[in-house]
Image 1 (cartoon, rainbow, N blue to C red):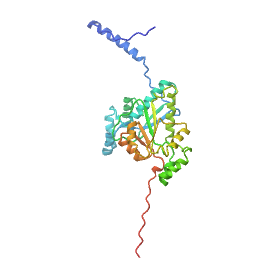
Image 2: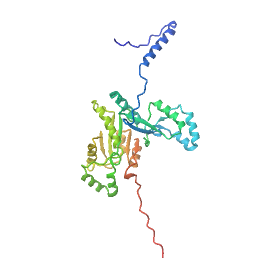
Image 3: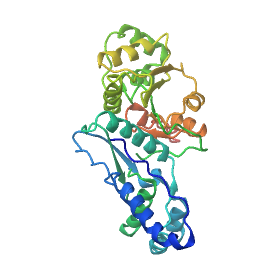
Image 4: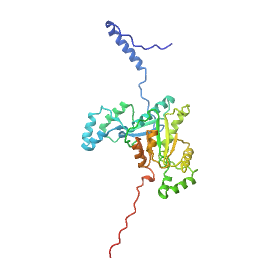
Length: 324
């Protein structure tokens, strides 16, 4: 049997309007209630890719922070209570989280019973009284949601395709090669990489995240959706393709991983290129690359790992010999 078409009736005359209106409202309510209102069930942590996002990265809280700094915690709490029904404005991590949710929606459509999705967790050290406003903001935007650096200016990014960019050394890979650069210079580094081209680098702190993204990508590939995959990954490295790029690519291959694009900049600034690919987040272990990304409007996350975090030690000044 063909489903009946739901059509709003023509406006009746004054006498019939009172009787017809409730009937129409009841019918409309009945059909609206057929749509499921239940929110998707949260996945078990061991099955999901957990992303932790700080409240100040997810939402803009500049005014609230100013009040806290200048007027103290009591005035801060009072302000939050007075404004708890006003959602916070989206912060720098907001587009990243929306893209994660877009991927989750696609995955649930393709794999309704799978828990292999992103589990987004909001972390905060705010006063407990601020919790109501955070919850209200989350409900307003429909998200719950990596402590990151805000860009110097806003740049539009995709809300339907998650784009994640990674540095190589001390991010995806260990800092083995960076230690050679620091200790012996670039010429020795090039020699080392050529000699060890077929020896995979050890894994770095973000290798697991790329692995998780690759696993989710393959779920789309298996449905014939490689070109329409809502996840895209990038390797953005200061390495040179000609002199040291092969080892990076062969390392990824040995792990059974790949990135959609591998960009070897040979020491050039990363900011301008990141501005063109517009990732939702870029991971790097060196603060000057993070700052360069910020200047060009990219949300960047500093990875506190490796030799780049070791403060440079200056040689102690020699004391002049005491006068005899």
